[in-house]
Length: 79
Image 1 (cartoon, rainbow, N blue to C red):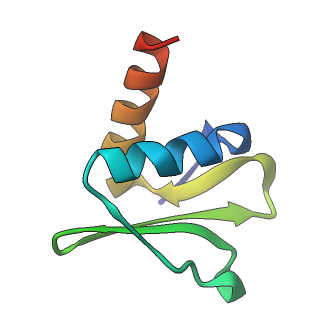
Image 2 (cartoon, helix red, strand yellow; image 1 turned 45 degrees about the horizontal axis):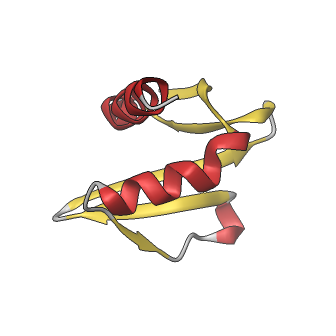
Image 3 (cartoon, rainbow, N blue to C red; image 1 turned 180 degrees about the vertical axis):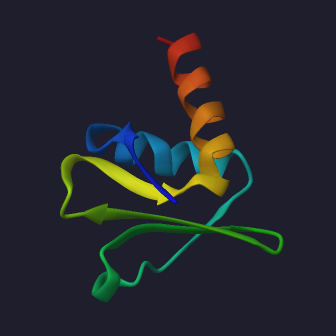
């Protein structure tokens, strides 16, 4: 199931920077499938994408919820 209401598009650049700092390697996103971020850490691949259901938030599979939770906690702590 996709989650569509936690990662606001205004945080996209900050999220990409955070992924790199957390050890993720950014890969080329597949623009044909609305991907905006594709990242790899070891064998793990995380994909985040635009959806027509929400213009304000990015979508991602719920298995990546931990990544978003960690990012949001760190952003909030550093605000």
